[in-house]
Length: 454
Image (cartoon, rainbow, N blue to C red; front, side):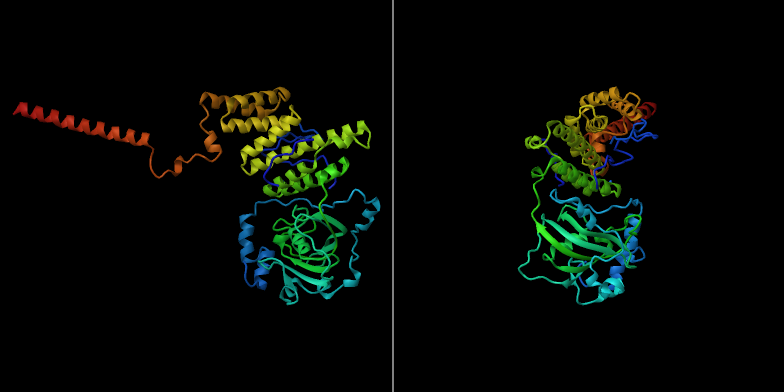
């Protein structure tokens, strides 16, 4: 079995990896990557009463609080549209895809209520027959069709299936799925959906009004969801069940589910949400595993090919995880992920370069030199490796005064010391003593000369 990545952070399969301008080494045809090489395809982001003004201030940049938040995070970039992850049980047939409708027809034709069609979000906020799901009162719910008290409700970590559709305030449909399946707490859907599902019983139909910070925030989702957009959901909880053990699934389904997680991590990485990205990569690594039973019930050659595919995807996830950890300044965890890549692929240039650079910053010059030389042997035309080797040589000779390990890791506390060190104090004291002796000696000589003359 492939070893799991030891990490505290806990749509379709694609060959794309996170594109990072600083830490991730990129390959794409027709351009040069960070190392200076041509890129190739296939290689490796208040409690209390809420008022109408408070709700609008969090939903649009014109509000006071939102304006501050917009100015503080205005440098973040928008990303391409992200369609919600859809998990599908291996036993389901292809006709399930027919249930996923993207047309303008409502999934709840018998519940075309006034709140869903015409009433503004401001008026919905003031209605008293809606309940608050969060302490800040920015997520509200109204039950359209309740179920009996014996119907089960989901708990954290269970897998649920819902029928849902979502609109903006102008009633533009932006999300729609007749059978959306996800695991509560794994971040595969918006936080608003997770909060609402936790309050529902199986079979219940409800409306959900969510502020932008519980959906897509200040970045929105191009091209259909603008920044700071509140959303109105209509949903029904169809099924509740325990999460399946990944090792009990066929290897092909593990690959598919693992890539869902990896793509979700890429989505967060591109939005500069590095903590969420790292967590998604760790969950992908938990799914992308192999075991001895994978060859049973299938062709041996086919099982080998799938196992190699799992290894390739693990390498991609680990490289992206290392990049996210570097963004979070968790250097030891980034080094650990890079070493895991090298255990699977000893000639992975990205991992060799990244591990060598981290070790150089940590002061382990000998090991860093070995890794960077291996990377240079594999990619002799790479500019970044040459630059890092030159920096390492300067550090070994004591000529690099710009970046020391303690400064890189944030341990350089000298500028913040309130009192000088003992060595500095002694140096200053001796200077004063020598100056005083010189003055005293000069005075003595002057007195002797004056005495002799008299």
